[in-house]
Length: 264
Length: 305
Ligand SMILES: Nc1ncnc2c1ncn2[C@@H]1O[C@H](COP(=O)(O)OP(=O)(O)OP(=O)(O)O)[C@@H](O)[C@H]1O
Ligand SMILES: [Mg+2]
Image (tube, rainbow over all chains, first blue to last red; front, side, top):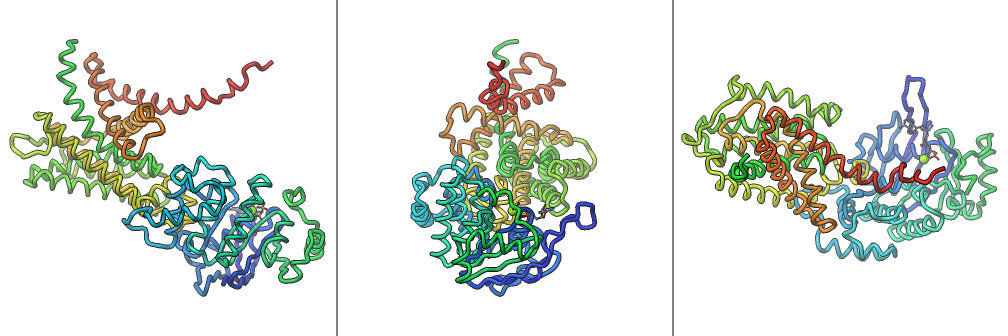
């Protein structure tokens, strides 16, 4: 379970570049809830996910994951509870290391990294099977450097890495935005499968309204550092893009602007 | 310019190259694995020499003196690591600060004198230029053991975390790696190796000198880069990690052979550092220029009207 209460974050406080990016965000997720997050450019979606990941400390509020208050934990300590996939395919993997080494690194998330082997034989077998399920032929290239993979292959691998040790919360920040539509669809399909199989509590930011409606069992919309819409259950199932745009205008009193969302 | 003089000098150059190869392996750990340009080494190399010579002349057996020299280097690297990770000082500057501090510390270790002799006739030394074949054997064994240890360590869970830290810090943090700790560990181990090499070189030449580490970083880089270029030319894609490390040492040996030839050609010793800098600049430039030749604006613009 994830409980976020009243988190606030202001960047460059006290300078002319002062920016209130999070303005009191509250959110409670039950185990296995899969929430899609939409919102205009600069609405604070990435900032919200970064706050949970501990990229920097929040100014106010609490973040509690499965009963553990992580608000005061630094990014690497908090990683124990979180799986993350980023927008840029370069961010989530070590390019100069082998596929299998990347997996083994991720497999030790939240564990002590001592002087035992970096990859064990039994782990190799397990990774082979998991890579096979991705259906990208990566199981036959386990010792290839990750830098040689395409963006889509990298995102699929990062997704696998994020979920190798079951995370308490999975954070996906526009993880298909840098991919071509066909690859994006495939990575989304894999995302759905992995979340379903492992019953993962997930937050997925997307700029594609249709994807936001199609995937997950709850949808939230952000604007100016706040959650302004929260749609779940039957209401979400029957939602259309028009409904969503309409609701946005209703709540915020302005038109929805996300150049990427309008285009897609 | 007798050819025989050159040949007679060669074994000595090879021995020196192997000893400096140990130092280059330390540089490899920071420069290549951690992606950190660490200038501490100019100081920690001399620290290793000073500690070893002071201890040996004080009656400590040479192998034990070398171990203590190693730990003195570890402390130096640790200091740079703390300056960088705890106090947020950029890598190059953190290294320079430690290096400068070490200059005073090294003088203090040698009780204020700029150099200190250790006579092979009086003490039982591990290596010496009076017995070059013996020195070559000992340094080959040392190099093999160190490469073996590095290969093992970097293959462990901790070593993998260290490599990931150098490769992608953001990803490493997201995977729960304490990247600051990894940086400190790598800097400490690297400078330990550098100081060990300093202790061996001091025994080899029969004295330690406050300036013996001046420009060591450039020699280390020269070895790493020359080794890489030659290793890739010979083995190409077949380069595995052990070969990579071995070629660092090969690079150091080649560097000292080239220096031997240059001296034989009567280049004034004063110009050696200039020569080294030019060599390193050339080898650093090769991979870049090769990339440029493959895809450059000039090429793309050919045929433009
Ligand atoms: N590290 C930072 N320093 C300063 N300002 C920041 C920082 N991170 C985000 N911001 C600002 O906070 C606001 C929210 O940014 P955020 O990246 O969360 O938006 P977003 O909802 O993810 O938008 P997009 O759809 O464009 O990705 C923006 O105005 C942004 O400029
Ligand atoms: Mg964003």
